[in-house]
Image (cartoon, rainbow, N blue to C red):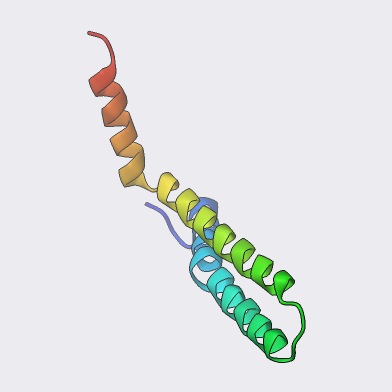
Length: 86
C-alpha cells in the first residue's frame, strides 16, 4: 500500500501536476504574450516556440505517467507472456 510519504507516489504526483497544470498554463501564458506582441507589431516567434515546448513537455510527462501506471505494466507483462515461446 502506498502512502503520501512514498517517494514513487510523490514523484508521480509531481509529474501529474507538471503535465496537467503547470505546462498547459504556461502554454496559455505564452500564447497570450504572443497575441499581445503581435498586436503591437512585434515578432512573436519566441512565444510560439514557448507554446510548442510547453505543450510538448506536458505530453511527454503525461506519457511517462501513463507508462508508469500499473495497468500498462500489467498489459506489457501479459503481452510478453503471450508471445513467449512454449
